[in-house]
Length: 277
Image 1 (cartoon, rainbow, N blue to C red):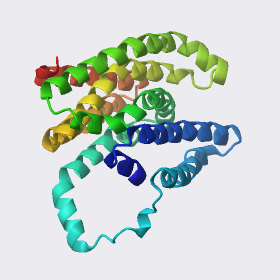
Image 2 (image 1 turned 90 degrees about the vertical axis):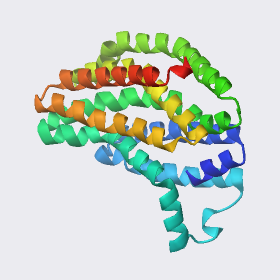
Image 3 (image 1 turned 180 degrees about the vertical axis):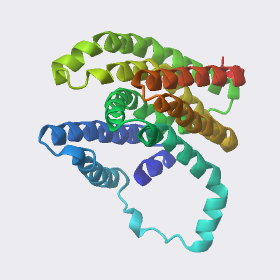
């Protein structure tokens, strides 16, 4: 992450995008390889270590500097940065709730099997979104910052959303239609209960893209309060609707409630930021 930030500061968007994309793809391949070779739960842990090594080596290749050689962050500087970036840190916490908090909530109210089926379906679909979004999310704030006119920024966001959705929606629709056959072919009947979770999360990708692009726009404009509010609604709202479905121990309702929430949040973003349209 440090190297990616350094590349963005240097306006080296191409290298940052390459680093993010290759790192994400390798992470996915490492998980598949580890799972296939029987690593079990460690299939998600070992790739994290390998990804850190990859990011360090390739980050150094692009930047030619080790972070450890830079001035030490003393307590006074840390307090200054914390005061200045507290909304960013809180927003990051809220985002982590949106991405991983569902498993905790489902584990409180529902069975272990429900947690497993939800995780499998949600994670596989969300990986599709990550592959689509990872390269753009890392460079959009810097790109927007270089556009002085807010009108041009707004038009750029709308054009990006239109372009992405024109390309992505047919692919998502095809994956939704073929998902039962894909799950049967790859895993027989083992994970068929995860199919609807997978489909519901895929249907939410346009809304997730909207959230991601608007978040980047807030970052470019320095609107950290609005960014925090967006991430707070995203994270806490996801937890709340997940709890409703989990309390009923119903995998279908959990997935359905989350999809409906993403859809409503997207509508609220459009309503409250009508200047984007």
